[in-house]
Every structure is written in C-alpha cells, then in structure tokens.
Length: 244
Image: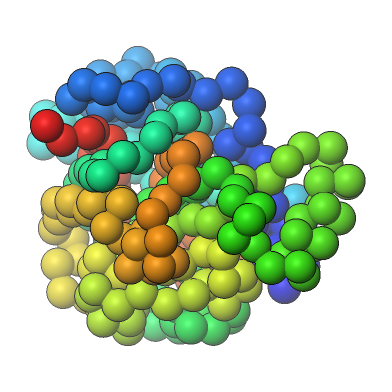
C-alpha cells in the first residue's frame, strides 16, 4: 500500500502538468463552478491512480435545487482535478461547500493506514528547487526520469478529518511535502452543508514557513482505500479568487 500511495502522490503531481488556466486578476473564480457545468469534463478531469483498481465515483446531481458533485467511495480512491497557473500574491481565497455522510472510524491523519477522508480539497504548488534538500531533489529526479516530466512541489490538503482537531496542520504520513489541514473534524455536522473559506497564502506560510510559489492545481477527492471504509460526499462550487 505504501508504494501505491507514493505512486498516488506522483500521479496527482503529474496530472497538474498539462495545459493550465492562466489567470492573475479579477474576482471571477479561477476554476469552473460545478453549478453551471453540463458535464464534469468542463475544466475538471478524472484523477485515477496506478495499482488502485477501485475508483471513487463522481457525478453531477441536484441537491435542493442546486447542482453539485456527488462523490461515492467504497474501499476506493480517485478524484477530479482542475489545473491552473496562478501567482498567489499577498492573499488568495479558496471557498467551497461540502457535505459528508459519515467520517471513518479508522481514519487518522497521522498514520498511513488511516490516511483516508470522506472529503478533501488538494491544492498543489510549483516546485521550489532552492528550498528542497539534497535527498528530496534526488528522489524527484528519479521520478522525473521515469515519467519524463518535472513534478510540482508542496501541497496543502484541506480535509474533513476523523480525530485531528480543527485548525491543526500535520505532515502527510507518506510525504512531508504535503501538509494536512483539518477544516472539519469528527461526526459533528455530518449530513449538513458546511461552508469553508481559507486564505491559501496564510495557510501555506503557517504550514511551510515561507510565502507560496505559483499555484498549479486544485483537486477534490473522496478516498477510502487504506481504511476499507465507505462514504458519500457532496461538493458545492469550489471558487478560487483574489481579494481586492
């Protein structure tokens, strides 16, 4: 499972490499809204991983008159990604609504066996070679030789956790280049819509101790392959905007 999840991290990184949405000004969201889409391939793409045969399912559905994405995961993992190319500047606001049916009894953001979430938002940044250590650069070079591409760098994962307290940030158990940010935790509010707003720049500074480089991608993901659990999640519009 460890090799599979390491491949998963590399796959997520590689999926952010193709043609991106270029944007740097204005209040219009830099990712397409689920509520206005006629199909999920309008700015978002399936994200599937090597050695994981069971995929989470995503579809557009109606929830009280609003179109949202419904995700179903059962001992499975996959996601949807939107690629962007955005200089964060002093502030970059990520907003979304989500709802989950349940949290995972075996979920634990601090362990590899518990690294599953009924809902998460994955934010990827451009690689900073000057900030990476020797072993990190060497490891990346090995992967790049295999895949023939340069990988993105650090990432923030906004998660609906099981036990990690809201507001706490911990390193992903598979890689310390990904930091897990608990924005919801436990069974409180399951079955209810919850609105979340985060300043990506502030979170990156807190997680990594420096200003963020260019933002290269945003993904939604509901997974359960490590815990063998199951859940349903609903994602409302994900918006990425620069404030005045």
